[in-house]
Amino acid sequence: MSHAQVWRTHRQYAATAARWSADHWRKEADRRRALRAQRKPLVADARAALAQARAVDPQGVTSLRHRAERELRTAKRHVPDPMWLFATKTAVALGVAGYVWLPQVSTRVWVWSAVAVVAAITALTVWIALRERDTSGLNPTAEETALLKRLQPQHWKEHAEQRGLDGTFTGRPKLTEAGIVCAVRLDGKWTASKLRAAEDHVRALLGARTELPMQIKAGKQGGWAELLLRTRSAADGDDLKWTPERRSIGVDTVTGEQVTVPLGERLLIAGRSGAGKSVASRPLLYDASEGDTNALVIIDLKMVEGRLWDHRARVASTPRQVIDVVDELETEMLERLAVLPKGQDTWTPTPKRPRITVVVDEGAEVMSAATKVPYETEGADGKTTTVKRSALPGLESLARMGRAALIDLWWMTQKPTIDDGIPKQIAPQIGVSICLAVRTPAEARVVLGEDAQAKGWNADELPVPGVALIRDGKRKPDPVQVRYMDKTVVIALPDRTPWTRTGAPATATAGTPTLALVKDTGTEQEPERDGAVSRVLKAIETADAPPRQRDLVDITGLSKGAVSKAVKTLTTGGKVARSLDGRLTIPREDSDAAAA
Image 1 (cartoon, helix red, strand yellow):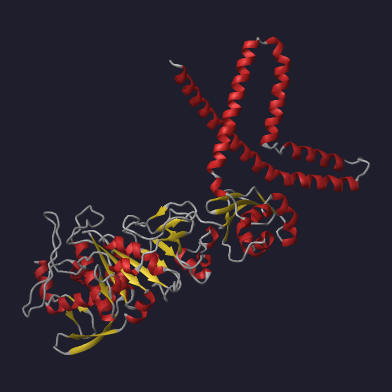
Image 2 (cartoon, helix red, strand yellow):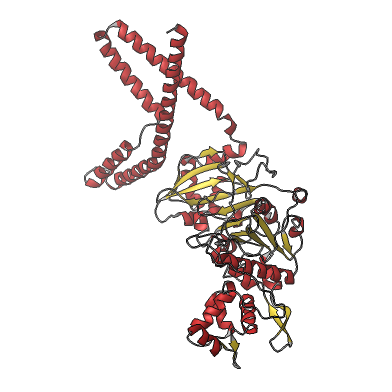
């Protein structure tokens, strides 16, 4: 082995030893720093107790003073030395031991030991210097320097009582890519929620500006809270313009990771006007309309966002169009479920039967406008009557049963309140919530859950526009800076054939029954016993008493429109008879034939 190889090997070993030593040094220093911040206040309390005992018993006659002295010694003993002091004491002890031990050891051993120690210290120094150089990008700003100084345990302890925060103690604050993070110890009756309610006192103690985002949440263990000051964002410096190569919805402002929302989830996208709801949804709409096995349907009564996507999506912009497309989607869903092979949980998308994403843009408008729309129908007696129909029951049916048929509902609203902006039948079906800035904590709880604020999901404190919280059961309450997708980019996207229902039978495996649609051409044709017709007919056959049409809505779980169509088909075909009181029965001759 040459001298160069020997030297290179020694350098590799030295670098490995330096990395290991630096890592352990840093971990041990952090541990000791945390313990000192936690236990030094106990020493101060013990000193105060001793001073009080000396005032009560200056002669030391009773055990009160001796117990206070003993508690002070115990508290001091439990406070570890800082790492630099511990290392100094260790070096002095080793030096004394070496001086005593030196005469008994040969010069050769001592020289090589000294060389090894010097080499290790040199490598450790170089490694620490390189680490400090690598992290120079996190140099604090003037604002962060002032906040870090006021978060120091000594400063906090001196001023906490004046601000009504007596009984809280800060740990050592840290500057991260997402801002300043500091642990806060909670004594007495303090809790994380109580400290959160005292946010104004915390802000006053720190002298923080009013616009600075502040988050207080429960710590990793009982009796501790975590204070976060969003002085910076991990998304800073990232190009947030959307491109086909950058298809994520946004960037996590704490970790800097790309955040994606996969297809196949029922979404709720909420945010007040101007929060950036439409911009945040555009990357998702692109994913939902891209590929041969994906199709997009947009319900937009405002006729603004849907118009941008009409070259790639089926768009319904009037109440009548909304009801018609919902009827088509519900029929498509029932067909898919009827021919779903046994043992298969979800539909397999194909170019002819793709995954369909139904986006309701501004759900409050749909709830108010796409209801009670007049439709003319022809009865069995040939008379024309006017009935009022609503799209809401069909949308609720899609939310409840559409997932297995790969028909996913996305609900968007500016007013996230139950039965005002979100139907009560749809809200429990939501799997993923994307919440931009909202006006009140109550709206944030509707979108993100009743436990939202207690766990740090404070959507009412988000900046406007373009920052969202995404709760999917996996993410932490870290804000996401959403990507910006311009209108011109949407318009320039390649055209795609919008989805429309063709009425062709679904492809199924051998031996699986298929559903064929039967049009009324003037001659009576027997409908297939599948889909809505089959379910309604079975409900009438198995009912204890002849049901009314409105009862079938609850029995079958179908919408009023679907039940009405099925009943009309059955009565026209003679499969079902309607009595004078409106009850539906099976004609006697059909029952006898079925029994035979």
